[in-house]
Image (cartoon, rainbow, N blue to C red):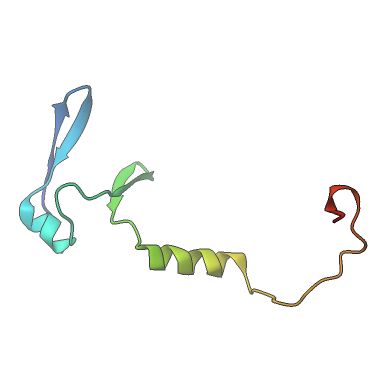
Length: 82
């Protein structure tokens, strides 16, 4: 991986980072795409967000196994009564 440099400049009331076109192409990003920005150990880390499919897979893996069995929670009470 070749090291390249970017410039931080003022943009309105905020700041912006100027990236070269070939860097965006290598990351498969386009102008207007959203990116995730994190500060980790004093470094700014820019990452391409996961697709919905990847986010869904991560969610399912983090929840654990799905158990489709029915459970008996006892007799209905209060507003649960039909």
